[in-house]
Length: 235
Image 1 (cartoon, helix red, strand yellow):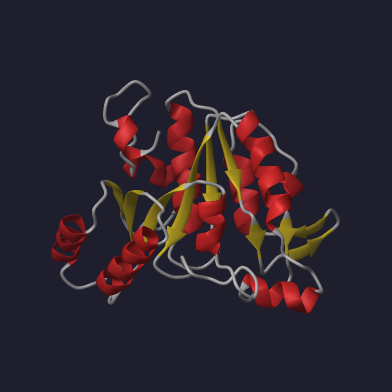
Image 2: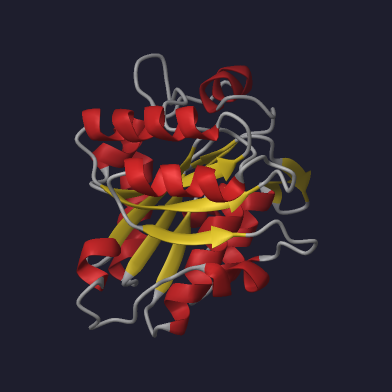
């Protein structure tokens, strides 16, 4: 596998992981890199004429450098909008790592970077004993932490970063996504995160009326290939 993989996790569910992942894919493409998106397991899928589809996975599929089959981008598509292990149990599906390794290897063989989006937060269960943190470690992925900036985000961010380190996974960077436009002391919160998270900040995403990835990408600070700082951030 030639690609470098980056696992997008977050301080909670609903804090903008997909928007950050898709915006990151577009920014990396702007630097000339071949980029693929991967959503290993997605719950809350909708029935379509082509089968179950997840909006987040479709967005990652759209932002890739080249078209990929949906089943490769999202090997496990589950209908109930609940935690993946519960959705899989309801659907009678057994989640296994081997199909995910196979799909990831296929994407990696034709890409420079594979952006892998988790589900919910860092320790969301994958099956009866493993979590998505174990998936990141199994695939040997560095991690990018999306901090949903709102009341309580400092605690959530620091707890998540500590757990990432405890799992032996590298925190490559973090992104502040302002999901509460009225959050108190925004500058102070961002300064606290920068001082206490042992990784570079790759951008502050403002609260936009139109938060499409195309509008968010410019707020991400991604060095071009060959920039000395690239090695310490993503690649």
